[in-house]
Length: 363
Ligand SMILES: *Cc1c(COP(=O)(O)O)cnc(C)c1O
Image 1 (tube, protein in one colour):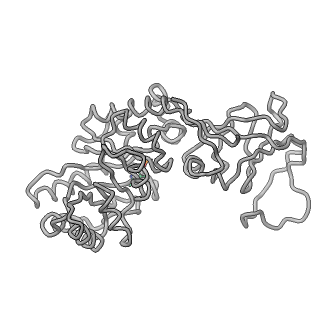
Image 2: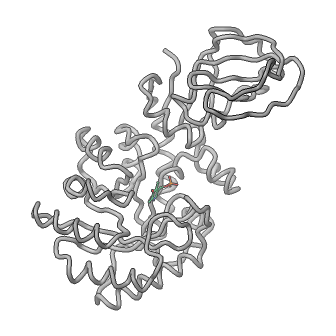
Image 3: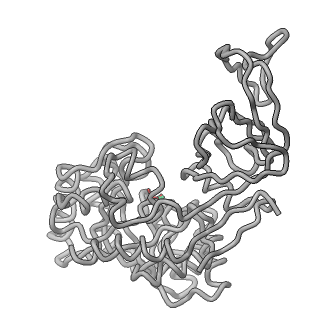
């Protein structure tokens, strides 16, 4: 059945091995971030086979799902700073969690006390990307000291930062030195070393690749970096990443519903499209188009679906359709043909959770 998503586990395993071994060589523990594909247990296993020492995801429900699938021989890290309402679940399922709010930490400590467990926490600094984290670094150091001394059912395992997400701020050696400076202040106050100074995500892996990551950063949380479709090679210009990793872990296949030559400019009075938008069109005259059976309901941003066949271009889509320009395509396409596509992160995220997309695995 189509649409169909082929997942190449051997390639994932190989990519992860290359990335993890480069981190390990620099003394960095890798947390395998698996939220981009809803913690698909077979993909998680492949990543763990490659030597990742922790599994990380943004949602407690995914940790529960992994444990139910028999993955329980590895510590779990919760990435999204927890909601007040889910602290009991966090205490039950997450060995480590990231934090940025003192009142949540206090409540988390109370919940852990009630459950008679001690849980590890990593306190986050905001170094300019403007998502989670303490902005005032004195306040952050004080909070860390308070956790260490005053919250006995929490263990302050480390501090961390997230960059290159909301604010698109590049992780640089300077930002890492800022984080190391905070760690130094905390360590001096609590009189011991922190286990983890967590320097960020795939965007921080760029410095491992270039050999510019300052010593002392000993933990990274890597998701997209082992699925290097576009992020590192193209967005970051690290094309030599492709010397040691494969791009095509995912192959999306979808079926052609209709092929017709039509005007490229819509005919009639313009109002709005099916999502309330007012799109603009360029009149390129009559062009051959193919309508394909996958849409935004399955794939999110259809503009991030990349046709593998030459001369095929994505024009757009609706909830259930993808519309392609195939005028310059050398192959004579017809209804029933199956096309292959690469996908970016924004497509991987919804499509790996779509009940109507069949997943097949290649070992
Ligand atoms: C999603 C996430 C990551 C991993 O991001 P990638 O770009 O996929 O490596 C790391 N840390 C946090 C806090 C995250 O939310």
